[in-house]
Image (cartoon, rainbow, N blue to C red):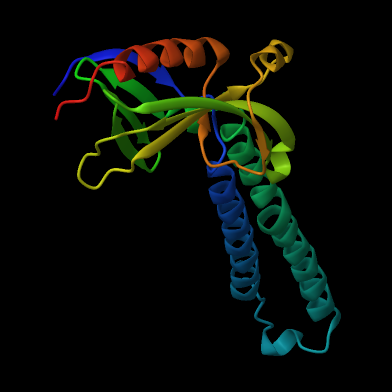
Length: 212
Protein backbone atom coordinates (compact mmCIF):
# COMPACT_ATOMS: atom_id res chain seq x y z
CA UNK A 1 0.00 0.00 0.00
CA UNK A 2 1.30 3.43 -0.96
CA UNK A 3 2.40 5.79 1.82
CA UNK A 4 -0.13 8.43 2.88
CA UNK A 5 1.38 11.93 2.59
CA UNK A 6 -1.69 13.88 3.74
CA UNK A 7 -4.66 12.73 5.80
CA UNK A 8 -7.59 14.81 7.10
CA UNK A 9 -10.93 14.13 8.79
CA UNK A 10 -14.25 15.31 7.42
CA UNK A 11 -16.03 18.13 9.25
CA UNK A 12 -19.54 17.49 7.91
CA UNK A 13 -21.17 14.68 5.95
CA UNK A 14 -23.90 16.45 3.98
CA UNK A 15 -25.36 13.27 2.36
CA UNK A 16 -25.36 11.71 5.83
CA UNK A 17 -28.22 14.03 6.79
CA UNK A 18 -30.58 11.88 4.71
CA UNK A 19 -29.40 8.80 6.56
CA UNK A 20 -29.91 10.59 9.88
CA UNK A 21 -33.53 11.40 9.00
CA UNK A 22 -34.23 7.75 8.16
CA UNK A 23 -32.68 6.64 11.46
CA UNK A 24 -34.74 9.17 13.43
CA UNK A 25 -37.97 7.98 11.78
CA UNK A 26 -37.06 4.34 12.43
CA UNK A 27 -36.22 4.83 16.09
CA UNK A 28 -39.47 6.75 16.76
CA UNK A 29 -41.47 3.95 15.12
CA UNK A 30 -39.56 1.33 17.13
CA UNK A 31 -40.06 3.17 20.43
CA UNK A 32 -43.78 3.73 19.82
CA UNK A 33 -44.21 0.06 18.91
CA UNK A 34 -42.32 -0.94 22.06
CA UNK A 35 -44.59 1.31 24.15
CA UNK A 36 -47.68 -0.39 22.72
CA UNK A 37 -46.27 -3.90 23.26
CA UNK A 38 -45.09 -3.24 26.82
CA UNK A 39 -48.40 -1.60 27.71
CA UNK A 40 -50.30 -4.62 26.35
CA UNK A 41 -48.16 -7.09 28.31
CA UNK A 42 -48.64 -5.07 31.48
CA UNK A 43 -52.43 -5.36 31.26
CA UNK A 44 -53.64 -6.33 34.73
CA UNK A 45 -55.41 -9.58 35.49
CA UNK A 46 -58.43 -9.01 37.72
CA UNK A 47 -59.08 -11.86 40.19
CA UNK A 48 -62.59 -13.24 40.03
CA UNK A 49 -63.30 -12.18 43.60
CA UNK A 50 -62.38 -8.53 42.88
CA UNK A 51 -64.50 -8.05 39.77
CA UNK A 52 -67.19 -5.44 40.18
CA UNK A 53 -65.70 -4.23 43.48
CA UNK A 54 -63.73 -1.21 44.59
CA UNK A 55 -60.58 -3.32 44.37
CA UNK A 56 -61.03 -3.66 40.61
CA UNK A 57 -61.40 0.11 40.32
CA UNK A 58 -58.17 0.65 42.24
CA UNK A 59 -56.33 -1.89 40.06
CA UNK A 60 -57.55 -0.23 36.85
CA UNK A 61 -56.61 3.24 38.09
CA UNK A 62 -53.11 1.97 38.87
CA UNK A 63 -52.91 0.40 35.42
CA UNK A 64 -53.91 3.66 33.73
CA UNK A 65 -51.14 5.45 35.61
CA UNK A 66 -48.67 2.76 34.57
CA UNK A 67 -49.76 3.02 30.93
CA UNK A 68 -49.27 6.78 31.05
CA UNK A 69 -45.76 6.30 32.44
CA UNK A 70 -44.94 3.74 29.72
CA UNK A 71 -46.25 6.07 27.03
CA UNK A 72 -44.23 8.97 28.43
CA UNK A 73 -40.97 7.07 28.85
CA UNK A 74 -40.98 4.74 25.82
CA UNK A 75 -43.08 6.89 23.49
CA UNK A 76 -41.59 10.32 24.18
CA UNK A 77 -38.59 10.56 26.51
CA UNK A 78 -36.56 7.65 25.04
CA UNK A 79 -36.99 8.53 21.33
CA UNK A 80 -36.48 12.20 22.15
CA UNK A 81 -33.17 11.45 23.89
CA UNK A 82 -32.03 9.17 21.08
CA UNK A 83 -32.95 11.80 18.48
CA UNK A 84 -30.93 14.43 20.36
CA UNK A 85 -27.95 12.07 20.59
CA UNK A 86 -28.13 11.21 16.88
CA UNK A 87 -28.50 14.87 15.88
CA UNK A 88 -25.56 15.83 18.10
CA UNK A 89 -23.46 13.09 16.51
CA UNK A 90 -24.29 14.33 13.00
CA UNK A 91 -23.61 18.01 13.73
CA UNK A 92 -20.80 19.93 12.03
CA UNK A 93 -17.62 18.60 13.58
CA UNK A 94 -19.49 15.70 15.21
CA UNK A 95 -18.35 12.10 15.66
CA UNK A 96 -20.14 10.87 12.54
CA UNK A 97 -18.21 13.13 10.18
CA UNK A 98 -14.92 12.62 12.06
CA UNK A 99 -15.17 8.96 11.14
CA UNK A 100 -14.76 9.88 7.46
CA UNK A 101 -11.20 10.22 6.17
CA UNK A 102 -9.68 11.89 3.12
CA UNK A 103 -6.09 11.15 2.22
CA UNK A 104 -3.58 11.60 -0.57
CA UNK A 105 -0.95 8.92 -1.17
CA UNK A 106 2.61 9.23 -2.42
CA UNK A 107 1.60 7.38 -5.60
CA UNK A 108 -0.93 10.14 -6.40
CA UNK A 109 -4.25 8.69 -5.27
CA UNK A 110 -7.02 10.68 -3.55
CA UNK A 111 -9.11 8.46 -1.28
CA UNK A 112 -12.35 9.02 0.61
CA UNK A 113 -13.30 6.28 3.05
CA UNK A 114 -15.25 5.54 6.23
CA UNK A 115 -18.99 5.71 7.17
CA UNK A 116 -20.05 3.91 4.00
CA UNK A 117 -17.56 5.66 1.73
CA UNK A 118 -14.93 3.82 -0.27
CA UNK A 119 -13.93 5.99 -3.23
CA UNK A 120 -10.64 6.93 -4.83
CA UNK A 121 -9.40 8.76 -7.90
CA UNK A 122 -6.00 8.82 -9.60
CA UNK A 123 -4.53 12.33 -9.42
CA UNK A 124 -1.75 12.45 -12.07
CA UNK A 125 -3.26 14.15 -15.12
CA UNK A 126 -6.60 14.75 -13.36
CA UNK A 127 -8.73 17.82 -14.04
CA UNK A 128 -8.98 19.99 -10.92
CA UNK A 129 -11.53 22.80 -10.66
CA UNK A 130 -13.33 24.91 -8.06
CA UNK A 131 -16.75 26.53 -7.85
CA UNK A 132 -19.09 28.06 -5.30
CA UNK A 133 -22.16 26.05 -4.33
CA UNK A 134 -25.28 27.15 -2.46
CA UNK A 135 -26.21 24.11 -0.40
CA UNK A 136 -29.56 23.39 1.27
CA UNK A 137 -29.86 20.42 3.60
CA UNK A 138 -33.05 20.42 5.65
CA UNK A 139 -32.33 20.66 9.39
CA UNK A 140 -28.83 21.99 8.74
CA UNK A 141 -30.23 24.94 6.80
CA UNK A 142 -28.57 26.66 3.84
CA UNK A 143 -25.02 27.89 3.38
CA UNK A 144 -22.49 28.72 0.68
CA UNK A 145 -19.70 26.26 0.08
CA UNK A 146 -16.41 26.40 -1.76
CA UNK A 147 -16.24 23.15 -3.70
CA UNK A 148 -13.22 21.34 -5.16
CA UNK A 149 -13.85 18.85 -7.98
CA UNK A 150 -11.29 16.27 -9.07
CA UNK A 151 -12.03 14.42 -12.30
CA UNK A 152 -9.56 11.64 -13.11
CA UNK A 153 -8.37 10.96 -16.63
CA UNK A 154 -7.74 7.35 -15.70
CA UNK A 155 -9.84 5.42 -13.17
CA UNK A 156 -9.35 2.42 -10.92
CA UNK A 157 -11.64 -0.54 -11.50
CA UNK A 158 -14.94 0.03 -9.72
CA UNK A 159 -14.04 3.59 -8.72
CA UNK A 160 -15.73 6.84 -9.81
CA UNK A 161 -13.99 9.30 -12.10
CA UNK A 162 -15.12 12.29 -10.00
CA UNK A 163 -14.60 13.13 -6.33
CA UNK A 164 -15.67 16.39 -4.68
CA UNK A 165 -14.66 18.09 -1.43
CA UNK A 166 -16.16 21.22 0.12
CA UNK A 167 -15.55 23.77 2.86
CA UNK A 168 -17.60 26.67 4.22
CA UNK A 169 -17.19 29.70 1.98
CA UNK A 170 -15.84 32.97 3.36
CA UNK A 171 -16.31 36.53 2.16
CA UNK A 172 -12.79 36.61 0.69
CA UNK A 173 -13.70 33.71 -1.61
CA UNK A 174 -15.79 36.14 -3.65
CA UNK A 175 -12.53 37.63 -4.93
CA UNK A 176 -11.73 34.32 -6.65
CA UNK A 177 -14.60 34.88 -9.12
CA UNK A 178 -15.62 31.23 -9.02
CA UNK A 179 -18.77 30.11 -10.80
CA UNK A 180 -21.87 29.74 -8.61
CA UNK A 181 -24.36 26.86 -8.73
CA UNK A 182 -27.05 25.82 -6.28
CA UNK A 183 -28.83 22.89 -4.71
CA UNK A 184 -25.95 20.42 -4.56
CA UNK A 185 -25.18 18.70 -1.26
CA UNK A 186 -23.47 15.53 -2.41
CA UNK A 187 -20.00 15.90 -0.91
CA UNK A 188 -18.30 15.91 2.48
CA UNK A 189 -16.91 19.11 3.96
CA UNK A 190 -13.57 19.65 5.68
CA UNK A 191 -12.21 22.56 7.70
CA UNK A 192 -10.74 25.57 5.90
CA UNK A 193 -7.14 24.66 6.76
CA UNK A 194 -7.60 21.04 5.65
CA UNK A 195 -9.28 22.16 2.42
CA UNK A 196 -6.39 24.45 1.47
CA UNK A 197 -3.85 21.73 2.35
CA UNK A 198 -5.74 19.22 0.19
CA UNK A 199 -6.09 21.73 -2.64
CA UNK A 200 -2.34 22.38 -2.72
CA UNK A 201 -1.44 18.70 -2.56
CA UNK A 202 -4.04 17.68 -5.15
CA UNK A 203 -2.94 20.36 -7.60
CA UNK A 204 0.68 19.29 -7.20
CA UNK A 205 -0.13 15.62 -7.80
CA UNK A 206 -2.52 16.40 -10.68
CA UNK A 207 0.22 18.38 -12.44
CA UNK A 208 2.20 15.16 -12.76
CA UNK A 209 1.62 13.66 -16.23
CA UNK A 210 -0.52 10.54 -16.21
CA UNK A 211 1.16 7.31 -17.16
CA UNK A 212 0.17 6.12 -20.63
